Amino acid sequence: MTPLAVQNHQPFSTGDIPILPVKEFEESLRGELLTQARMIGLFGLESKGQETTVIAVLARPLKSAIDLIGTKFSSAKNSYKTFADIFPQTHYFECELAENHQIIPEGHPWLRPVRKQTICGQELYSPYRMEGEEVHEVAVGPIHAGVIEPGHFRFQCHGELVYHLEIILGYQHRGIEKLLLKASPYQQNILCESIAGDTVIGHSMAYALAVEALSNTSVSLRTQVLRAISEELERIAMHISGLVGIANDIGYAIGSASYGRLRTLVINSTALLCGSRYGRGFIVPGGLQFDPTEQLINAMKENLQVVYDDVRAINEVMFGSSSVLGRLDHTGTVEKEWAQSVGMVGPAARACGLDTDTRSQFPYGAYKYTHLPLITLSSCDVFARARIRALEIEESFRFIFDQLENLPSSSIRNQLDSILSDSGVVSLTEGWRGEIAHCAFTDSNGAWKRYKIKDPSFNNWYGLGLALRSEAISDFPLCNKSFDLSYSGHDL
Image (cartoon, rainbow, N blue to C red):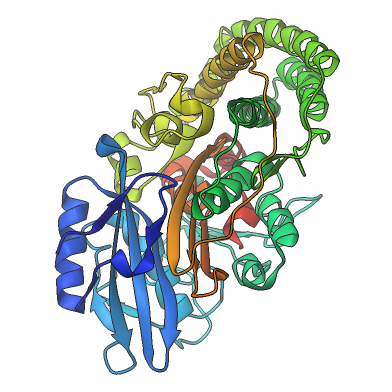
């Protein structure tokens, strides 16, 4: 049976998702993956008695389509043949499904916890270990110095070289997906802004678009443009922050200090637009809570012009420095085939030559009307992950300046209609780390039945592990910062 095919933010009836017998589900999903579909969700939709309905969500970038297909597992038949042995991109999704619903992927090459310490009733999980002469193990975390969130890194080393890095997360247990099911609409918006504190706009945009789709609510062009500008400001601020960290980790103090002072101007500009330096409370279902005046927009333009000019000058110096390039080149390489195999997304994937960007492949809001070039690099190393930030900063500035010169005049808030019952929507946005996915499903009363979230860090932590293979352990801080992943975005 053909999967249900929908567009980004297109509502659908839950009953239209084909629910197949397990064997047919396996065959259909395997066929999808063989034709370059990328998994963006594999989760339990609902459980009734001894039966659990499982939904697979796959992205087809070449068609700008999203496919959905499902099956049912019972306590008597709670297993399926793994996909991860052939399609590593499904590895973590299968582990999450097993952890949450005890549905076992038979033949899985590395079944391990995602956010807990046990999986499928197993005893406390034991990390992978290597043995041999001069092999030693280095454990870091989960408690770190300063304000870093908890995460455990376990290195298997031979001398100074890392042969395997296992990353164990899930120490926060925030339960955001469950909280969303019983929160009021106002609280839901705050919860989605808190999924990853440095990606407030990316996640609140995904939530607002999901609600608007399920309530058949349209928003004005001015709203769409201001939302996109806020998303690009968030991208600029966090890319500059990443360049601060990279420069700092290689001892390039002048670069770190110069980028650092500019990030403040960017988030101050976000405050002029949104009323908050991090964009909190700006985007809400139905529109915006704050409409900047002409005076505020002019002040923002002046700030951003200073940042744009200075960032270009600093980029020229930093990426023209032989000592900088000597540390970044050929460090932390993730080959294109590896990146594609494990399903990496965002700038980390584009730095490996992968064409993946939700803004161009699954356009939404103002991105439907304005082209943003999809930038890729091919060296696949720390240099590429740093350089692509600089290039994306420049494109984000170009987009913002263009939009501000032609900012439409209209209302910024529309009344929401009632939420459709027994319906669903897949809401994709492009956060600064990459693809954000919110899969929302309603019950017969129009309340949330399931709200599944995927932050781009869910895809890319595995990529960091690959980047450290055969690298010196002293390069870990630099590689880690070049990915700049979120603990809280993972620990939902």
